[in-house]
Length: 251
Image 1 (cartoon, rainbow, N blue to C red):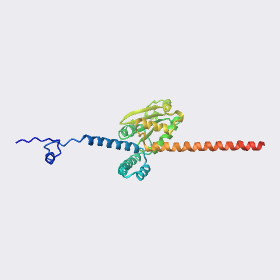
Image 2: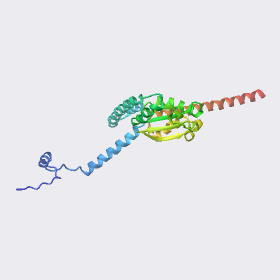
Image 3: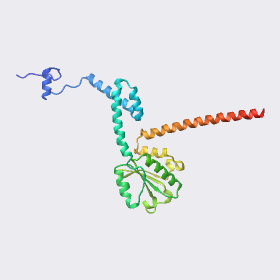
Image 4: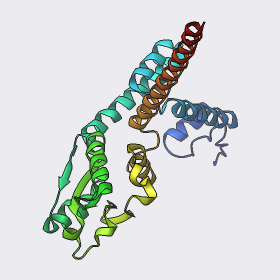
């Protein structure tokens, strides 16, 4: 005798049949689907809120969190610490500017770009902009050790390369030139700063917009601006006092 079974029923017999694969698992209830979606949305919102926090800031949040948040923040912090430890290893890979010759170019630049971003400075030693870019390369190489910075004289890299095109900045990834700048005209010119080079790195995807090293830059700039404001206020007070002294002297 064949017995019909309703696979949606929550019975002990159906549990036995499900365990043996005879009938399918019960679909989740609509309320459970909604609850899961709400929980995923909450976690996404919390991850977004925590994504640009430093380790010390995460520690402070962990101390302040209530019991329901504490486990989530602690787990996220452990994950972040693991990611940061791995990133720290990557960031120590290079750390300096590599001078290369034309025979080395394929290996040190094109092939190396399979593993990381490679920035090439086609330089002209006596050129002021080239000296400027060379100095920024040294600073950036120390700060972003996961990126390879390379220097080669333009005419040695490309026979007959015009001096007027130097400095030229080439950005390689996966053996291709992703971006090139002939002179610094479009990235700050004679007044190019570290922030301009970092913006280029963000634009090509070599570093992320929320990189903690960039966040620290913004904090430092904010502190510098505040110090400047204080200095300006002090100077104004000093000038005011000087004018007062002059008035007293005239009397």
